[in-house]
Length: 401
Ligand code: IPM
Ligand code: MG
Image (tube, rainbow, N blue to C red; front, side, top):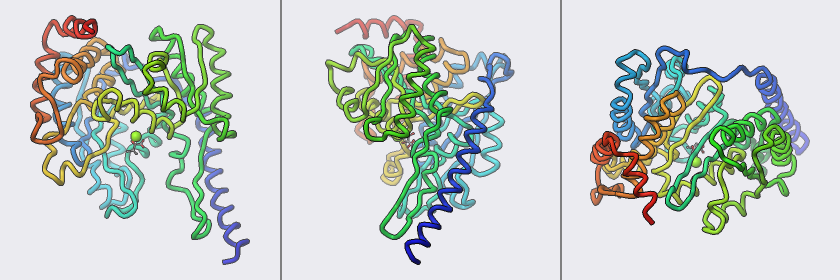
């Protein structure tokens, strides 16, 4: 093919991507209001096991969450449903990112709690289908990826609002090799998409008594799309006169997060998708590793809660699945309870996780037979969360220096 021909083919492809995104912008403009869970009877919670260590940590999480919400289940306020079939084997057999019946079952729930699902990458033996996470986020329009990282003793209390449907993720499987030597991906940032995530961050700050929102971009280099994100932040901030805000570049921010002199100054952070993906892994590591952090994927109608780590296929291959740490998914479960209106129970579970994972550490998980199993950790957590003194126990640890 001549250069002219490859350019024409690439232009046609680019045209299709733009058409789809312009349609999407129109849909965003029509978006409805936030769902009110208090009128949902019952609130339906879907449990999705996932791949690799997923079924192990999901089983442990379900056991604990079902126990904590047992009174709500008995009173018909909450219903649990197990959704099977979101496994890499089934997805590969059907060549579907999310099989139709699984998607329908998910849409019958209000919220889901999902174990990690394997994301195929070139050469790993699985067909190169899109990540189930990414697809679910797009399909259910779960635009806010909320990731808290807390180290109460160090005075760290961060909440990341990672945009979840745009940026390099929006059309990540629609990039093109224009020629054998020239690859192009597309980065999508829209006014509407930026506005709703930035507004969610500011409104969270206001609701929770925080005083500052930090907007993270690389707008000095990525001028058009990050520039738009920052412009929108400027506009949204005007609606929140009581909240301060500042802008940081992503590179310096990765340094600031591990700088003890800076760490405490951040409260709520809002950022485009890929920066958010990277920065929240770093933040989770500061808290004790990606196994300790939960993640909420929130949209106006649906919400999905998950661990921030992957399915750890190597642990399964090496026969270590039973040693997988369920903390991350339990954190997600605590966030889910808070999100659907059970703030007290969710808050207690967070505190029990702080005690067991950060302070008391009577049982330690190492991911292998040198440490505790998922079930043993679950038992430890259960006895902690059941303790009527869990709150004061937590306070004692936080106060002790
Ligand atoms: C995350 C994960 C996912 C992402 C992967 C598994 C697709 O890293 O939730 O942060 O990149 O968003
Ligand atoms: Mg990630």
